[in-house]
Length: 399
Image 1: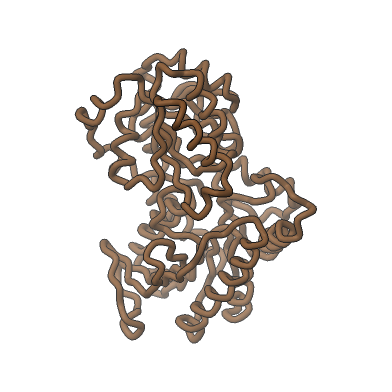
Image 2: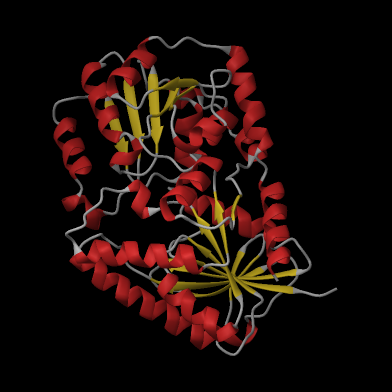
């Protein structure tokens, strides 16, 4: 049986569960390692230990020396590269240059003498690295677009550093051999914005439904809250609708809000959302902000929520919505972007992404057993095993 060698890149970590990109790569790689005819090597950032290293990833994470960094059945190789935060500023631009240099140096040092059949890049941050390896290995590049900077962020045409990022992003989209998006909505948006030829295919996100079903309802934890509990899980960025949530907190003292939203301490000083939350904590007692919430604690809080909220302004897919559905928690969600492809009136409560609509939906919420049943069925349909199989089929079609 011939073996297909895949080299995968992500300027992030598959162990960071605070965003869809980390979740997607974590579960995708864990399923791909089970195919006997796939040899997967993942190069990613190490935001946690700040050491980097070589690992064999099976049911456990095993650190090895370079001479032992060889493929084993039911494993994939992992190269973690030490990295730092990035900002869309002058400092962020310098960090990007350093990041590209470090990633390329590590890739060449540990992988330069090998050969790969395909490079799979997640988002365009590391295009400056991958374009050189594409030339070295003379192979095609598959690009998965999880979040497009040009479509999702405020445009700053007067900023040369922003323009550089946009140019790199556009170059990657045009130069890759095939492009994957997480939703039909994002496929159409990118094709229309960039006038791309028809080289785009949809591979959605998924959930580990069996894991979500196994999470137990914590009665003791629930007793801590004497008001209806409203929970948000997402990144600390305006596109997630956090400003709308803060307005709801101010106007709804009869509900308790929990925001599970990770933000690096090095970014707090320049994030207006974090600054506003700190001011509100002095005035309002009906909410909590959990920054870098341990995963076990996060799932417990999500499970006991009376209402889950996702008032996103922009959402390529919205993996957290599927997680809420799998947990059996009533979901209030924006009728926007990729969310519209699996969220509907039968499995959730759809709203316009405004503070007024969010507040009205929370106040009018009533338990609906049929809606929760439909939500669980929706989550069950998005299997990582099937997503990995579709990804593998795309690999083989490109080689």
